[in-house]
Length: 317
Image 1 (cartoon, rainbow, N blue to C red):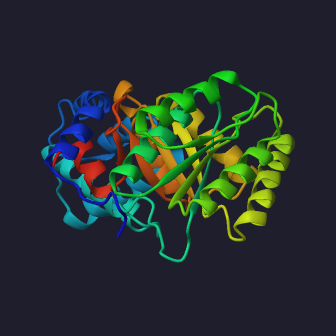
Image 2 (cartoon, rainbow, N blue to C red):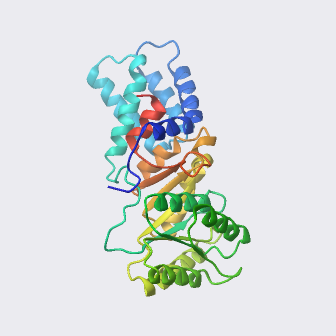
Image 3 (tube, rainbow, N blue to C red):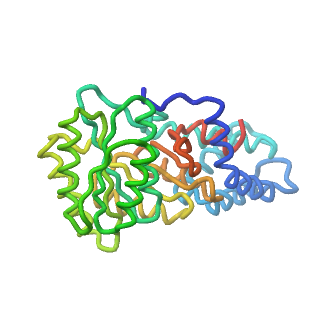
């Protein structure tokens, strides 16, 4: 079990509030899709397909969901439109639970991997640095010692922002002057963390995607240098995606998963958008677990992603 696993009333309220714009958007569209209909027929299913696609669930995932509902309607013979939301919720939750990725644990810290190294990747502006700060806060709150590494040495703003977060959270940060070799920063961070018996290291990286080959080479170099200090580092490569960009988040996920061995995802900025359906598509399409979702600016507003709770919040209990 992960160290952020407990899901209480307060977290549910944060989730419901964070997804309210998406929920309102989806329900408004569903209401129009079933207007004047008493049972789920081909017209309703066609309209529902359009609702899901325009809610950024993605074409492939939408087709899977519609197929499941068609089979349910065929099996149950007569399904009323009043039942549709509950069926939709159940089938989406079941689809996501079947895709072989862990649910609701966040990052676990094995006793034999210390410090546990998390390398964070993602394009500029997706909320990468903020996510690192919130993660550091949650680890520290759980009693873990954390080091931050400012390896995005190409943007002064990135380093400055990470320094601010390190001060807010009260954790040490390792940085060098602008334009320094990012791999050198990673090496220094891991060396300091190891010497001080830290539990967790979180490394920020540059978010340039204009040249995939350069990005791949840079990330590979950082990983190789890390291994000189801790042979099996990094233990996690977390890709941060901006949920408010909808389908663009899919494209970024494709680019980054092709460029490096991403094994965890965080989807941010869901509170300010009606495009929260993108989490359903990303969770289904990429066989990489969505570990965290960002639901606001507060330190507590980075939540572990739990598929069933997410779908329940979106479509009602």
